[in-house]
Amino acid sequence: MNANDKIAARRYPGLLVLGLLALSTLFAGAIVLGSVACSRDALQKGLAGNVPSTPDELLAELKTDKGRIDETTDAMMKRIDAFNATRKPGDRQIQFSEIFNENLSADQRDVLNQLVTEEKDVSYKSLLESIIKDRESIRGLQEKVLHLEQTLPDKFVIAKKGDSHHDLAMGYLVNEAKVDPAKAKTLLASVDQTDELLPGNKVWFFYDQERDAFRTYVTQGEAGQTPLVVRRAVKRQLITDRDAAQAKAQALEQTKAELETNKAKLETDIAGLNGDISSLTERRSQLESQVAGLQQNNSALETRVAGLSEDLSFRQNSLFYHADSEQKMRDSGALSSVLKRVKDVKGIQFSEALDLRKSTTINLTPRLYGLEKIKGVRVLPAIYQEGRDFTVETSEDGSSARVVIIDPDLFKGKEVIVSVRG
Image 1: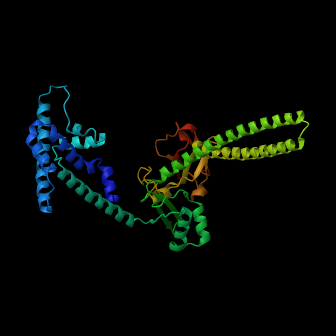
Image 2: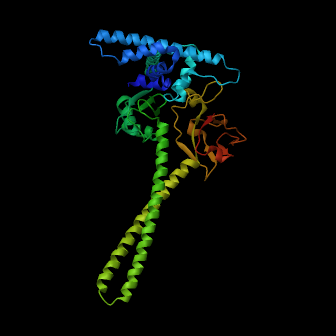
Image 3: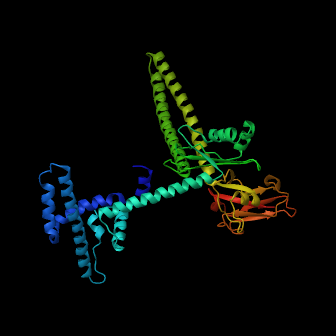
């Protein structure tokens, strides 16, 4: 199945198999419905008889059988309509899709019922024609997407197995943007990069030489997962690794306790024996060495668990933000020029973080954003309201400002834009 087939299958669940299901199930219906007994007998006889000797004979026979199947479909529909017409308001009526209850999912039955309700042709021929038409539409949309991508100023490469975001970005800056390697390292240090590239991801780059600005980001491309899904999977793996390390540490503690018990028992045996004390002493020394090794391993695991827990806790309790001048974000397309609302954040990396366990204040100075003074600050998206969720304090001379978080729980793990107006 190629990419178009996969898209069609996701867009129209069951459409690829409805035709075949209709053939098999309608044939079964033809066997049990008395109103189509003649078609049933003829169809059974044709399909169960001797195999034709030439292709033309077989095709002629099967085309005749196809006509009987279509007739059976029409007879079943009329039978259902006649039955439903006799029902009183509130009585249960029969839907055409109920014939396929054992073969179709709920979504597939809904598609079939919708076709019947709209008086569409539900024969296998019509369904196949619909699939072909939709595949042509999908192919056209894909060509439009490709054209739009080609008109973007951003360039991209397709990630391969073993590629890293840092190396691909460095290659673009040095080889295509003709940036000095030392300057390229400085530019890369100011942008977010991901360590979780999948083969097929599209890695985008854009360097504005006039503003000396560089951006890079990753989209799904031909990979099976989006970058966001991969990041969440990494987070889940961190939790799994932490839990596994904790379980291993507990097991080592148990082993250590058992060894210490054995050591105490051996010491008691040594004290009560006048025999081979040397052998028992050597055994005790071995056990003591094992206990020391287990204690060292336990300490290393405890350190690793603490590190994983701290990293996870930081991610869960921090506010991630991107602060810049309002003018720069309008120029880059991140903010709309009229309402000053968030418009497009695909080029924004939320690389700054505020650990809300330690502080609830974001301090701002105008020189960091190319401004002489700060006249105002906005926190976006607008779902966060000033005075209820946060406050903005600006010095009288505009030399500084700060955003104070009123409700830290609301912002934990979230990403916001801090727009600074000069």
